Image 1 (cartoon, rainbow, N blue to C red):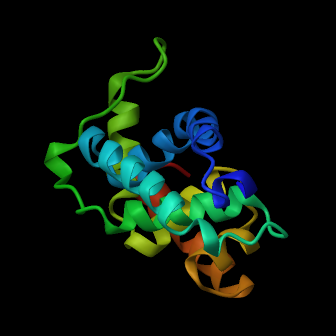
Image 2: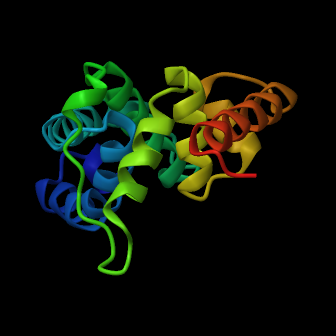
Length: 157
């Protein structure tokens, strides 16, 4: 990212090649739409370049990148639940499982969904909380509420 800050196009391409495949599933879950996820992915990379000077090399790049992606996903139009375009799951997964999970995710408030998905991506609750702009205890409470809402929607106990 330091090379990107110096306007190195090759470094920018390397970052894209490395991180775009990881960000796309996150954005797809965030938006619920292939088209919106692709648009949010492109917007993410535009913002990475546009805001490259805002990146602080003393902080983890992954956290900064997912924050940019999360904001791009939030700014994408919220999809109509009936228009989800679902990526196929593993061959042994019943097709309704993926559909039910995405619908459950989209019952959450956008900020709670963002928090939940950042934790799914491997960020700690504290990190995810900071990325959505809330303190640790608030993040834990909201994550607990989000998990309960998803369990209720899936009727899983």
